[in-house]
Length: 417
Ligand SMILES: Cc1cc2nc3c(=O)[nH]c(=O)nc-3n(C[C@H](O)[C@H](O)[C@H](O)COP(=O)(O)OP(=O)(O)OC[C@H]3O[C@@H](n4cnc5c(N)ncnc54)[C@H](O)[C@@H]3O)c2cc1C
Image (cartoon, rainbow, N blue to C red; front, top):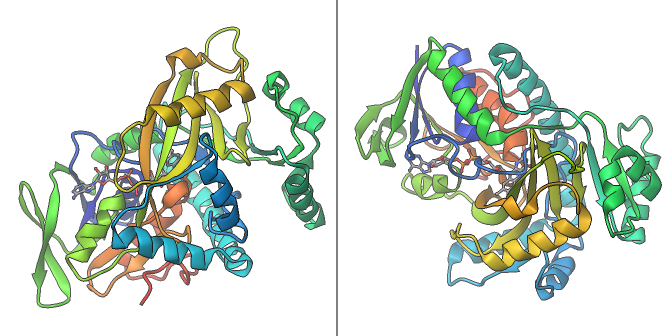
């Protein structure tokens, strides 16, 4: 039985630990905080968006970004830093903003999403996690601009056998009556049945409990990983932590954004940069009319998901470095947009604001798999879709650690040579 040490108690580290334990490995998970899911996995959008995976990097995005930056309530903020990390990430992102690159990456992420959906089903069957507010109401992406909607609807209608449906404004309101209270005339929407939502933080807490019952799980270690004790030049003998060394046969690095400085100690450069986002969690009471399907407002880049008796609203991409403070101006902008779009959906006066840092790669694809260090494995860089992809990437890493091949083609998802 190999002893696998997983670094990071977010959704990616927890699913990795579960997948490894299920395959017969002895697993220890190290998390620096007093509880799991206090990082990016804490109050995210909750969407399990297996089929809506197109990366942010696309043709036309640099031009749109300039418009967004001029709008004080726009979805994007950029604070230039004297940091090589920020500028090299931006350059790589701009290089990825080409239609053929986006098409290729979307195909890969669609395959990853489909695998993740089946991996989640298996995990859910094995664990039957309670209290995670799991529903599969489908996802409606609404468009405000006629040209944008016409372009996407044309593509959807041309795809024979596609699950997606292009809906007019009235059809959108018939599907999701909460849109009828909006002061906005929509151009239309694309509906994908079957897409799910769940509470990511509760999922993490419940999975942590299930892990503690797992016969192969050795336990959580609350400690900060500071580095590695190497054996020879190319393998790790132990993980160095604030509470001493923990010997490891295999190490899975799943520490979100902090994976970057940890990997750098081993000479591995991870192209990760924080894309800061915000969420609001507003209680739903009697008399409110919340959306039941999960809704994405395409132009404003705002997601809405009903999670139990709360409405979760997630939005914004701020390139401002590793700053997860809550900017009251961004929260005010979000309130303004949300109250106009779903005025009767929830008690916005009681909304709890949160900011989190998406650990993002320029291409939008996570980095999974082997490294030049023979017993170090990566599961990082899930960006805007970490909850969605975590089940797939956990299974991939666990299969690789077990000496088998990846169930999904890994080109484009691995550490660049
Ligand atoms: C506003 C917002 C909305 C989002 N909406 C969605 C959505 O709707 N659907 C979706 O699929 N995804 C969504 N995401 C993305 C998703 O939340 C992230 O991709 C995902 O949470 C990343 O998980 P992670 O485990 O890699 O990172 P994290 O959750 O940040 O976990 C990393 C963990 O590692 C620990 N750690 C770090 N350094 C160390 C160290 N040295 N020693 C020990 N422990 C360490 C941290 O404390 C942390 O707990 C959203 C993100 C944001 C910010």
